[in-house]
Length: 148
Ligand code: HEM
Image 1 (cartoon, rainbow, N blue to C red):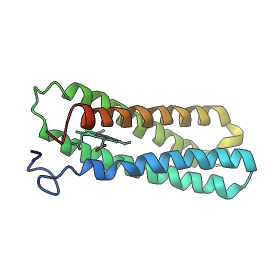
Image 2: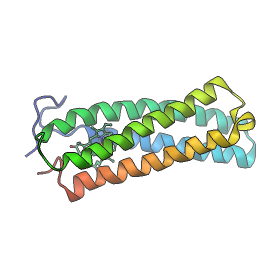
Image 3: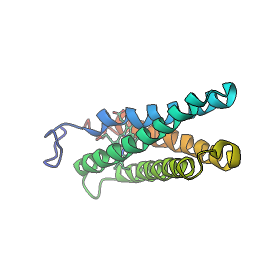
């Protein structure tokens, strides 16, 4: 039975309701950037920037709800090891997404002037999304966090 007095909705895991947004917005930002490189339409690149802004904000919200939800586990619970790896990937995503935003903000022509470092950071962000969410799935569906 899941219950934590710190949850915004008592007894209910809120983090899973927030995790789709950083995944969707980050990957949408990457796809729109690829579409811009392919078709050269500047609108695609502008929407990619907005998508990265939204994914950073969504990752922040997901991290905060995750930090609250992890209180359901005792400090000595061995499943905390997986939670900690999951947190590392989540924080890596926040940093990488933040750097992508910073570069785009600082150099609006970043895809011309600093294309490969920018795309490299973006690709590392995709890896962080995949690892964070794979470990999230492990937590819930294999280790039963939030379920038992
Ligand atoms: C950095 C702080 C974070 C902490 C402490 C954290 C903690 C947790 C915990 C305890 C769970 C188990 C389910 C629950 O009780 O809520 C979980 C699941 C999950 N987390 Fe996180 N998380 C964090 C960040 C993130 C981020 C940034 C993402 C997405 C980019 C994410 C994606 C997921 C996913 C997909 C699941 C599985 C949800 C499901 O399928 O029901 N987490 N996380």
